Length: 115
Image 1 (cartoon, rainbow, N blue to C red):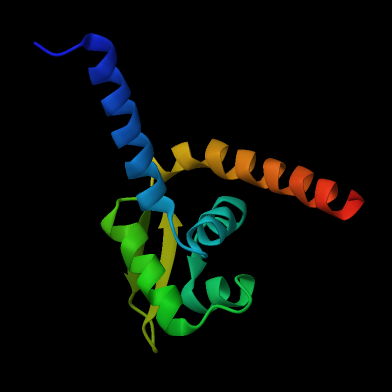
Image 2 (cartoon, one colour; image 1 turned 180 degrees about the vertical axis):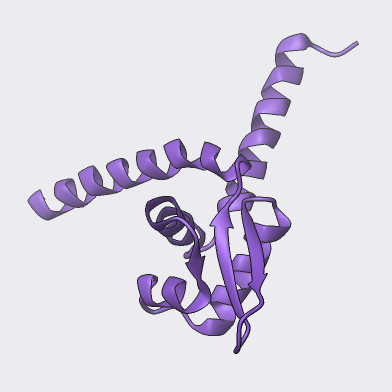
């Protein structure tokens, strides 16, 4: 049997690694934040809100978020066909993380500006 403390530390590190991998990338936090604030959004709306993101990168990020059960993708039966994205119940758990990162980022920017 292994050392209990070592096992807990290993699980904690693996959990941290999973969380970082899941949300890694320049745009995932921005996408999640926009969906938290706006609710269901279409592709073009997300692209406009995340200024500077290419359609190819947005599509890739959305696919990864969908694969990881953080967003749902709905194909609407319209002409032309439109696709909308929304947070899943599971993704609502990321709201605290996103808000904490924003709070830290704002404080950090203030410290750097004051330097």
